[in-house]
Length: 522
Ligand code: ADP
Ligand code: ZN
Image 1 (cartoon, rainbow, N blue to C red):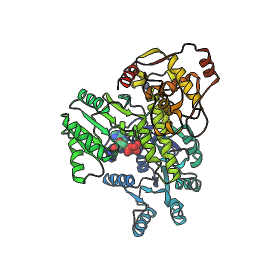
Image 2: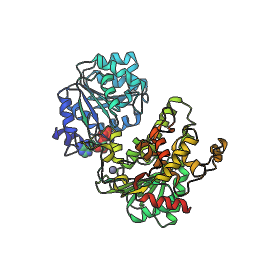
Image 3: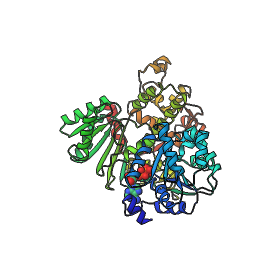
Image 4: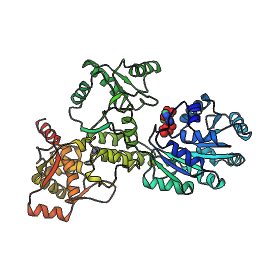
């Protein structure tokens, strides 16, 4: 195996789990592989494909990736082809003939092919040694990227029961994992779950207040080192790059709307260390493998935790300590909501909403961010007995924060009163607006500016109030109402607390205080 690895792929050693997975496949066992993007999943079926007698089928939904992979395999002298909608009929026929003659080792397929009866007949006649299902979470409605065509893979499995199947994905919750196994009809599959942990990355979420000042400070502390800053719009990238250059930084923009030449030049400049900072939309990063990016900043909310993990994952590829900083404001959430609400397709809109809600939960988290991310990807390697609430990774802002007790009696009474007075029909964001005396249209329209609780808080910022709402939820003084929106209600304990006026001490990170100060002084 090592020899094949060297000869065909040019690598000296296996990545974690690759050897075990390949061993299992060679024994013709079914396997389920969960590995982060960039972990090296392809090798797990490409290398066995070379050793096994017949042909290996690879099902993949990503047409552009398919072509890249096939080109790379061909360049390494491996007989590989693909069949998808980008090929003409004549081209498809030529590929099929070669497969029938036994000339191919690996054949990539788009899932919609499997629904075509003629094509299934063709597959049946082949000497198939292995089927690899890439992006296997697409088979599950519980996943984030359901593709109905993937359901036909169950039929494919039943039509070739003796052929081993290997399912691979970078994201799978417990539920999705079960779904993959049952939908594909995997037989006692060996499950391989690689760690998603990037121990050298430090995760931090900061309130987006005076964000430019904060950004400049961050970059000054890392002068001369490589950083990627993700923005929302093309215009934002240009403007921010300009402002950073005015501050004396070497910064260039990157987005899909630039002409190819400029974009390529900016990217090259970054890779060759002529430019320290690239200010980019999410278009940046595909296929970039710069090992020494020391800082990834999100100026805006990422669209999903998958996107966040992938984008922050571009920091510290060389294993050295690197920082990931996300600037969060509730206003950005509302901005994103606005764009999401314009999506026409119902299912797509809901999916985008769910993904954003997950990102917001991550931002407002009061427990270890690393552990939360890993759990999201189905990696419970950090669980090891420690309970979720008290785990400390030592490498995220929550875990690193120095905690202090503070007297939360008065603010909690105000919050609970505001929840009661507004009829227990609103979320924490709205409660904060009422308490802080916001003049937003909704508050005025509902007449909540007439309430006695309106505008009675000036010593805590909106974000602090939302955070304290979270603590009161934890304490059982508030509860979340069931229903579509995360509205808050007061529990029986909460009512007791209001009546008894007893003291309430909560803990918060030390930085909390500074934020409150800046909020009240602005
Ligand atoms: P995934 O599909 O899990 O996202 P890939 O299979 O595309 O990951 O692999 C990611 C990168 O890692 C590729 O550039 C690949 O060539 C490289 N790679 C895979 N296995 C090894 C290995 N054993 N040694 C070095 N590089 C590897
Ligand atoms: Zn942590």
